[in-house]
Image (cartoon, rainbow, N blue to C red):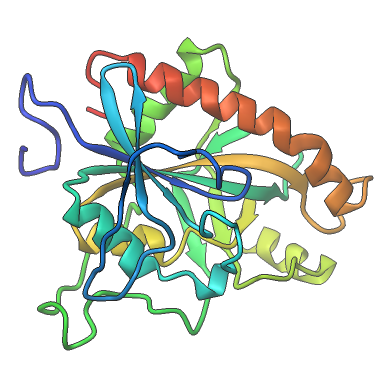
Amino acid sequence: MKEDGRPMAGEQVQFAIIAGSGFAALGGDAPARELVTRFGMPSSPLRQLEFGAHRVFVLARHGEAHDIAPHRINYRANLAALAMAGTESVIALNTVGVIRARAAPGQLAVPDQLIDHTWGRDHSIFDGESATLQHIDFTSPFSENLRGALLAAAARAGIDCHDGGVYAVTQGPRLETRAEVDRHERDGADYLGMTLMPEAAIARELGLQYACLSLIVNFAAGRGEKAIHEDIEASTLSARMQAMRVLKAFFRADHPGR
């Protein structure tokens, strides 16, 4: 690997997918690796799927039974397990609500910024016991190389994918009030979700390349004409199918993520 995290010529990167809501069964019955980290057990075993010539680890963020709430996920163990397995680049799949009308449920986005509104989670590996303290640079929270590769894969797959935008991370598991959505819009947020942090920051602390492919499944509170859960039910399948097409196109590239 080069100093900026990119592979040397001819070197294949070990990728992992952190699968969110709607993707708990992505790993299926593929071969599993059970790992125990210094932070405890991850949400699920690491299952290894084949995308073309790539063997990709899949970790179910909410557990394979989808029973772990966003604020109870052991994000540190999840990322540490991927690092232990040799992962270098992580594609995070997250479902989000959209605030602004330029995007709509059923579409995809690759955010380029985030605002963290979570609390009470283990936000860092630097806890005074597990690692030497570092103050990571988080100016740009996502790998631009990986973001660009996801957007290029979407273009090759013929998928309309929004480039950029601010993902505001809320505590959950409840959804937001109309007034909270108004506040997030004033803060500059485009999307609302519950799982991007501290996942993105811990990936940076561990030296992993990280980018988010967001599945837009509903309008945020007060922004749509349908009830939110009706919106989610109507839009999730379409967004999930498009995300799978993007992933397949991504791993068909000669050198994905470079």
